[in-house]
Image (cartoon, rainbow, N blue to C red; front, side, top):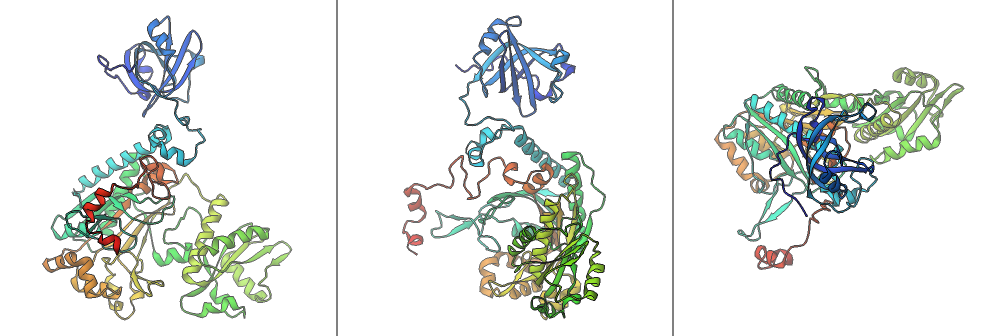
Length: 596
């Protein structure tokens, strides 16, 4: 039968006991992590979120507690009273923070019994993810997951403290809003009161935070929940959290980036004790793509892309001839010491490239006994020398070449670069590589829609010096946009926003929105521009991704208390699920939506 805590007040949490407590009578509470009955003495490891402390039961200490302890099993919830004692030298456990002491128990209360759990709650437990997610409340008892959730709390607290110190107001924005589909699909919520209409859950608070600037609040932040109905992957969930920031009277990107840098430095210092440099590196989008094949480059290793179009353009080889066209190129990377790669190993690189649209890769191996390549009939000695010089090739190196549209070349070689960085062990996983990528294109061409689209969102301001190209050559226009990249992952990003109603109207027109579309999707937002708009800008950091990066885990599920699986299901609560027909009839009494 479960007992109560009457008369017992916890002295300290399990992992906080130390030699300084020796001789004190204490009270502790927690889950049974391990149970060892040695006959005359019983040892129990008591666990809470701070760690483990060893309990000792024997007849010599307290007969009643010793007898009761014989009924204890793993995951029972206990409350104990006892005296902190120094362990014998041969029993000290240096792997535990409490390994020098134990508690000699004089009173034991079994607060809650536990059935045998469906899996062992240990770090070594080999259990599939579906089982862990089904019993998430048990999996969360593991120290590694608790460490990440506690880290998340530290990051959240550091954010609140820093933003408050800089004069930002914490303001909540609505969950139930208007559907303005841009990018991912919205999650829709039917309205019972306003029949046949829907709210949308926010993909981000973008419009609301800009309206707060129009409202005159000047500096806003929020740790905001966001919802996107999109395909999932290791670092993406249908519901996620952003550190959202907006500020008024800014026009230069540094105004926002300086605040963001300060926040990130504060988060690293307060959560993991790491001092970051006073200034983060900055590179422009064009340089990032040309050097690393990515707008979120991992620069912890070199292996950079080199443009060799001018060398190979007139070789007579068909695959290289398109490089003369606008938007095409031939680029290569030099893999040091890889000249002896087998056909199978090179084929693996081709597979990586094909995932990003490339038709395959070409290779040139500079071996001790000469050059080996299927391209030799098209590349003469003079061109080989130029390639060697440009890529700084030594004997024993292998170069990989891709020729295609720039986007395909960048994406494919960038992916190969990352693949090699990981498989060849070129990345120092202990280091943090942090940089800004700036001056993104304002527009990109959407081949599926056959129109221009906003690369970030349609409220991003163009660079002042590029305004002259807005109508004549919009793809040439750069944005006042910036992304913070940590270890090759986009940790956050933002922009200076458009505050001119004329430019905002032009932006909508260029991406193909009619006057009716604008009024339907953004009517209330556009209307607000009639009443005075301060220059403003901001950004958002992905809180989940920050915790992943600082916690050194590669799965976003590890940093969310109750995540969904890859099918956007909660296996623990069985959501999403069907609902009662009565509920549906209240929302759709005439069945109109179903009939259509």
